[in-house]
Length: 82
Image 1 (tube, rainbow, N blue to C red):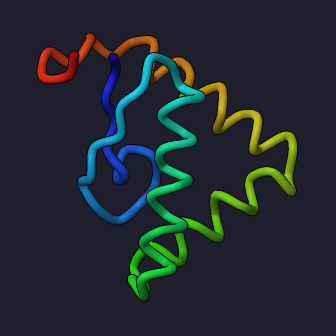
Image 2: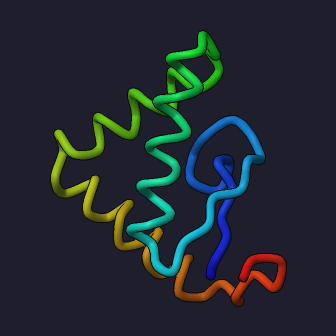
């Protein structure tokens, strides 16, 4: 499993997200942002809006997505996660 933090994905905190690939990590980040905003955490609101906005601008959104895929592929497996 790979690990990236909320901050590495453009968010405001260091909560770690785990997944076997970039898609799983991005989905975990999306869920984290939605839950944080739903509980009243205003720090995550900007990141959530940016996440939603990426898909409204396909060219720049795809550029971000491909960069995350490269970043995740370059990560070592997280030894703390089975």
